[in-house]
Each structure stands twice: as structure tokens, then as C-alpha cells.
Image (cartoon, rainbow, N blue to C red):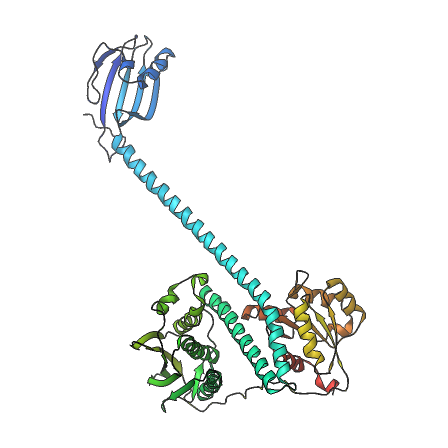
Length: 500
């Protein structure tokens, strides 16, 4: 064995083979391959047949790397002489090339893995983008008719109806609220799954909140001849500092979930305080109801794809996401064969001193009798939402309205005529509301450049509202809206003294 110094990590066996001018083996040290002297080199292995051509061309020195013969890998040198004899040198580099192959294979596997991972990531992003787009389109299509139902049922309840008519309209109004909540739940859950939303911590009256929840569900549950009870421990803080909307959402969704699976005649909410320290109160919410929930309901929050969540699991999935957001805990406990408790613990800050809680604005629109009518331009291509906004405004007797669904006609109108208010839907003829308001500001006459413009839209995230504000919208009304929500927003933005 002759050590090869070309690579210090491997000991390489070397074999020398002397060849005469006829291609016969003159002599060999037999270190690697057994050769019989006097035989033709080409008879040992087909590869050697290619080497004979080098002798014919009088090549002086040839090197060939990684030649596979007899399940081994060789580096081969061929040295020829002027008399057409020569020497073939074999170096067994099998271990070296096996190691190189393994390294290359691992590198290729790593590259393939990274490419597969990137492909999966791209597919996930595309899936999420498609899902977000689908939800947006779904919201847009459903909110338009739901806006009409919500606004018109609210208008009808303010009119002169007999008892049977009132109950029918109340039922329609209640079901539209359910649809509205279901749609909001789907959109809310999609947003929660996308990332960690912001928690808005402000002081609020916790006792007023739970009294409002009690009043709302007492009347709602009584329709089905059931009873809603609420028990609040005396040590629960009167005021809290937290996200009031999220806390209300947690409690309401728990009760809604109990309503869904309730088989008895009573649902009970218990609120107590676990402990209080470091300016925070650990609150415990327990909702009792008769009947059992699906065994896998508690773990449905682990499902990442919204499309795999059953409709009846939406409320609980949202509660789970919100509780996790507040670093709380949630569990479902079976009391006996036909009784269930939903238990939540969350930590919320409470004020150490007296706080002033802003007075809650009334939701009912104030009645006005304008001496001059408000000239309103409505830009909307959807006939349903056109009719809804038009009917709400006309019902007050205070507005003189005109509707445009063609951008060209709209721009001609703001250039030639004067208005007091413009309502713009999300988009018209595929022109986005943000782009449209920019064009209006450019083409409008001096009078119309300064009037309030309000967006009627399904896009009401914090980022969307900031975009609308930056573009020049004075306010945003979320679809579906009630008549009071639309009118209150308009009255807030108008200079009322001008019309009274």
C-alpha cells in the first residue's frame, strides 16, 4: 500500500500497471485489481478500451477522476512514452467519493427541503390570501341585503303597527341581528387567526356592562320561556381598566354557546373574584346550563383553518382566542350526565382611584325638523344599499337626495351642482372609495370641496379607517347599519345650525 498525500483524511491504495505497445499487461503490483501478465488490458474491463485511444494519440499524461469499476471509484493517470508503451496508475478513492456523495446528498436534501418548505409557505400565503379575499367578498355580498333588513326592520318598529305585526318585525330584526353576529364572528375569527390584535385598555364601569348583558339576555331568553340568572360576588370591582368590547364579547359568546346546547329551562352566569394583587383582579366567569356540548369543542381552537371549524364552534373559538389574548384560561366541565359549566379566568387591571367614565351616547337618532333640507349625493352602484340609504334619509323628511352609480355622471354632478353631504359606498364601477374621493376632490367645485364625505363600507379595521381618514373621509359607517347608526353619524358631521 502506498500512501497518497493528496488528501490527509484518507489512506489511498495505489496500483501501477505497465502496458506494452500492443496494449498487453507487462507487469502489475496487484494492489487493487488482479491482472494476468500478457493479457490485453481491454479484456479486464470495458473502461480500459477507452484508454488505448490515448496511446494511439501519443498523449503524454492524462488524468481521469472518479471512474467507477468493480463497485469502486478510482482516480486514474495514464503516462505514455514515445515507443507507445505506458503506465496506468489506479488510486482507490472510494471512501473519499462516498463521503463527497453523502455530503452532496445531504446538501441536495437540504436544498430540496428548503424549496419544499418555501413552496408550502407560498401555498399557505396564497391560501390565506384567497381565504381573506373570499371572506371580504362574502362580507360584501351578505352585508348589502343585511343592511336593508336591519335598517328597514328598525324603521318599521318606529311606525304604527298592531301587536302581531310588531312581533313579526321584532322576529325579523332579531334574526338579522343573529346573522350580523354570525358574520362578525367569522370576520373576527379570521382577524384573530391572522395575528395578535391590539387590546384597547380604557376605564369602564364593569357593573354597568354586566347589567346591560343581563338585561339583553333576560329578554332574549324569555322569548323561549327560559330563565336567565346572574350572580355577581360583592368583591368584584365596580370599575375596570381593560378592553370593554372584548370582555363583553367573551361573556356574550359564552352565553350564546350555552343557549346553543341548552336542553333545560335555565342558564346561569356567575361572576366572582379569585384574587386581587398588583393592581389587577383575577375574575372568574362560570356559565351553567343543562345539556352537554360536543366532546371536542374545547379543543376546536387548535384548528388553524377557519373552514374546518363547525358553525356551532365559532363562538367558543372566538372566546378561546380572546382569552388567550388576555393571558387567561378557559375550560369546559361536565357536572353530571346532563349538565355543563363553561369556566373562564382572566386578569384585568382596576383603577386605584376614582375614575370618570364618559357618558354613553344614545343609540337612537334624535328627531329634527329642518327648515332647509340637506342636499345629499349618494354614490352607490348596489341597488339594495342605494334603496336602504335613500329610504332611511327620506323617512326623516330632512333630506333631498340624489343617487349616482356611474363615476362619470357623479363627477359631472359635483362639478356643476352644490351639495351639503356625500355618502360613498365601498366602490363604484370597480373604483375604490379612497381613489374615488381623490377624484371628487379634484373635480368638485369650491363649495363641494369642503362638505363632509362619509364612507359606507364593510372595511372597518383600524388600518382601513386610518386609510379613509387620511384620504379625506369625515367618518365611516359600517355595513350593515341601522337607520339610527346612519342618521347619528350624519348629524354628527353636519353643521346642524344651518338647517334648523
